[in-house]
Amino acid sequence: MTSTTPLSVGVIGLGAMGRPMAEHLLKAGHPTTVLDLDADVVAAVVGQGASATDELAEIAENDLVLIVVPTDADVREVCLGENGLISNPRKGSVWMINASVTPQTCADIAAACAQVGVDVLDGALTGGVRGADAGEINLLVGGDGAVLERIRPGLDPWCKAVHHLGDLGAGQVGKTVNNICHWIQIAGVHEALLLGQRLGVAPSKLRAALADSPAQSRTIAEIDQMRFTWWKKDIDNAHLMAEPIGYQMPVTDLVYSLMPGITVDRIAKLVKDEDPDA
Image 1: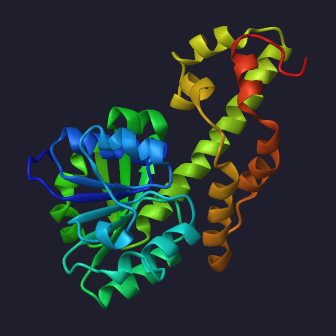
Image 2: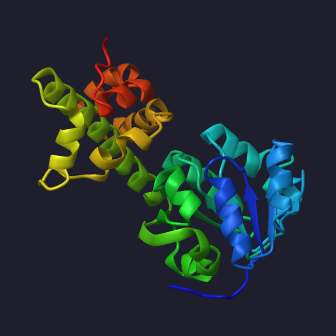
């Protein structure tokens, strides 16, 4: 869906994902207010037309607030802390939790917001930094579908697809499923290419061949462009979600034990046909 209806948007967190989100909003003509601890990044986005503030209460005055901070604790502090968004709630505003957090964090924030007339959605981001830079995030959303439709104009500039997966927290479930697939694939591709190399076939040739085979995947094609930053947090979150329902993840557990040895430098050597163990 494409719309030119302007929404005022607040973006909290101008990291690798939040900054391009804000920039795409500005290009699309949405009044955008930003908040981040890095003054240089803030200045760069202000130079593109954003307003800046140090006060979460001011961010809360927007139609849509995008919360792009790292952890559950950060999200809770931003939303419910003493000087957080909840200190100046605007009735009818929508807060979207774009961090990778647990469904319980989403539920706790939504419960507090229900008392003050603020709607909460969880909008998990997939597509990585390159997707964010290109305005091609695949957004996985949980929450009220009518609320989602209301704020679509504030999503279109930075999303290539928006999937409504269900009730609040469903976006985080979707992101966790995505993350499990992602890290399992990385571990599998690393192991497979290394086997090929040990048996005398260059990984560069194998990747070209696999691009025409049923094993073809984005992970094989782009593994040397990926950053392995969040594997521990992602899998820890998966365990937090799985434990209450007694769900076992033996493959994920194996990958958890393998990921410390799978580094960006190691992959870079492998795809250049160098021995990563040399």
